[in-house]
Image (cartoon, rainbow, N blue to C red; front, side, top):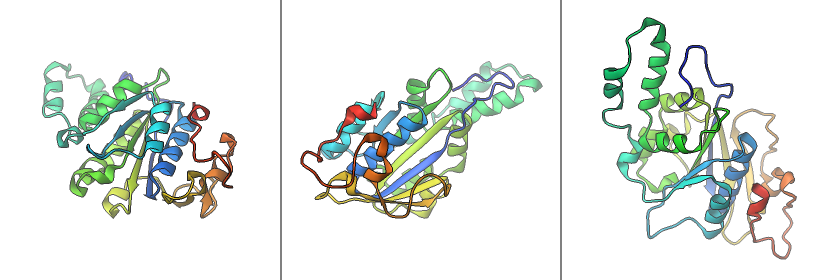
Length: 243
């Protein structure tokens, strides 16, 4: 969490981004690229439980691009706030009316899911920025994911503390999960096609973010020097170019 002194708000406000649809590897590449553009590095947690694992290509690009990762399995309690965080805080904080705003911010932070608190502590940069990437959240029950990530308060707290959250979901997320995300992209990829050919459509977000409806992921990331045309060797993922 950033410095709580009065008036010391982080210079960067985070954003929440949801990628959903088909194509685990295209979503992983896209999430990595967004994180690099936003901050430069990120923390990664995957929600698939053993013996299932992320697609090899998706795992490689995320491992090579992320600073820290939280290996599965993710337990149900990891998506809940610490049991005594807020009550314990009250025992050592000085009750000062001038510190009311700082106290409220700290209380909101301690209500975040335990997993998010741990990830932020590991990846927060010196400039009070952080990006968290959560992949394949569809592997957990909808009710659990909605409680943790469908909460407006969770997203607002992260944004206020300079944290951007990027979530990938295989399939179609519920309206409850979609609701708090400012930017929502549909990714249409297929296992038998290279990830550069995945079609991406912006469904919610700023109109000037550079996406035309159905544009290919390869065309969306020209700074990676990639194209959507299949050529020899294009199945490989140039992880070093995302550094």
